[in-house]
Structure formats: C-alpha cells, structure tokens
Length: 191
Image 1 (cartoon, rainbow, N blue to C red):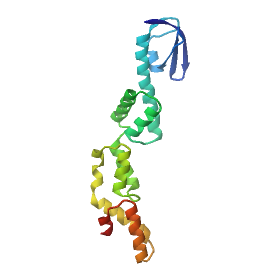
Image 2 (image 1 turned 60 degrees about the vertical axis):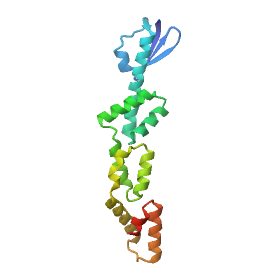
Image 3 (image 1 turned 90 degrees about the vertical axis):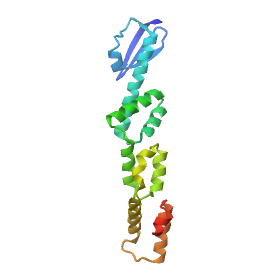
Image 4 (image 1 turned 90 degrees about the horizontal axis):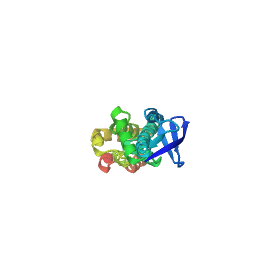
C-alpha cells in the first residue's frame, strides 16, 4: 500500500515523516539518508515500517552507548534500562551484542572490578549474591573461589579494628561479630 508524504520534519537525528492520513513514522537520519524518500512522493508503507524498525535499533544503540559512557553496568543492567526506556526487546538484545563485540560491555571484567572494590568490606558470599542478582553468569565468578583471598580479606578487616588498640576479649568479640555479619564463613573467622 502506497501513501503520499505530506511533510518531513527534522529534529537532530530524528526525521519524522507525516503521511496523507496524518500517521507519523520516525526514522534515524542515517536510515533516512539512504532511503531516497523526499516530500511529495508516494511511499510504500510496508517498506517504511522496515525502515522504522532499523531506525529503532540505531536509536537503541545510540542510547546504550550514552549509558555505557556514563555508567558501568552488567549486560543485564543495560538490558533492563533499554527495556525501561521502551526499546523493543530484539533491538535491545542486538545493541547489547554489538557493544559486547566491540568490548564496551564485559561482565567478567565487571565482576572482577566489583570484587576488588568490595573485598575488604564484604564477604565473598555476599559479593557472589550481589553479582548474581546483577545478572552475572556463574562462569564469570569462578575466580571468587580462592580461600587465600577470603582469608586475606578477613585479616584486613580485623587489622582495621585492632590498629593502635590492645587486643581485649571485647574487641575480639566485636571483630568476630562484624566479620560474621559481613557474611564470612564461621570456620574461617574462627581460624
């Protein structure tokens, strides 16, 4: 089905095409520039729908790149944000795959950074739980199973409490309770 184009409005990277029935189609400037669409011609509505779909992907990808430059999240975090912004699911998935291929999103690197910044504040169990809730796959969390790192974290936290203080029974109890509340394993804290 073909329809006559009444008007074409330009707003930054968005090109709005208004047809004779006052229906509007928004295209990305890159898609529009290769489409050979001009005012006062007839256009196939089905083809225009395909161009709109391609444009949605480009808009989605541009928004994702802005998010990546502002916030470092997991791929599932970015996916949730794109869906929240009402981008189609297939466009969101395709945009995230594009960003992963380019190296802009790396869940394993995210997990390692998260661990490094929290290892002296939280137990490995708690960090694992938080990373799982952020959508990190278990295969990216294999590096967290080192008992030596856990012992090192326990010692660092305990040293913070004992700095320039006499090691009394009350202080030991306080350290013990703090470490257990952070999710450290009972046996490792006793050790």
